[in-house]
Figure 1 (tube, rainbow, N blue to C red):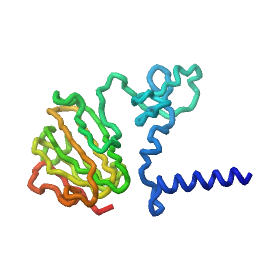
Figure 2: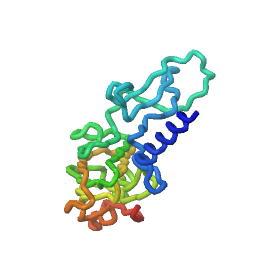
Figure 3: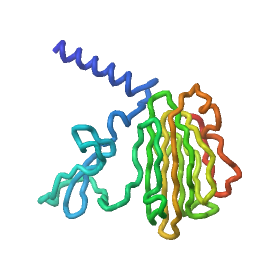
Figure 4: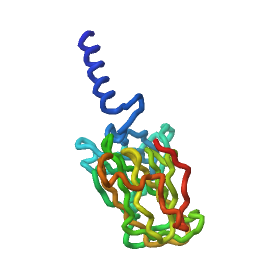
Length: 231
């Protein structure tokens, strides 16, 4: 019993030191976003997605853990859709630098796309986001095809802005170690897409003393600013 109590407090201290800061859960990506509920797929199969594979599961690649065909169709599972032939879209990045693109770039992206890119760096780092190429459907209100940027873990908090058209947006620097980007295309016009690069920066470095997520080009006609507050 004493040994069990000791192990409990030992594991708690490790989890608290790594996953929590000031009572707030941080760096959840390092603990694994792939812990998901299984759901129905096509042809009566059941499985669940892995977005951050480990050495013992997924063979280092993202994909679907397939439970196989279920003979008992009255079983209760969550429901979601998976298209194994879809182009690569979205992802979770933890590397100190990365370049990501719209599906099929430099060719035009497809209609009806929804992609999420989640950037999760080490605690204390910031994210310097640069647009290398940018060409989305031109719409003054950015209601057709667009990319949204959030200075947070998700697409609910820390809205920085929505971008469309072909004007290259200015660089953006996060206030913390996480950012989320959402790309959406409607059912009509497509365009060339975009390439975006990010690098991790130390909060004390010169490169992190420039524009932050609260300052973006007001002259871009195809830009929708969000209400932003520092996290």
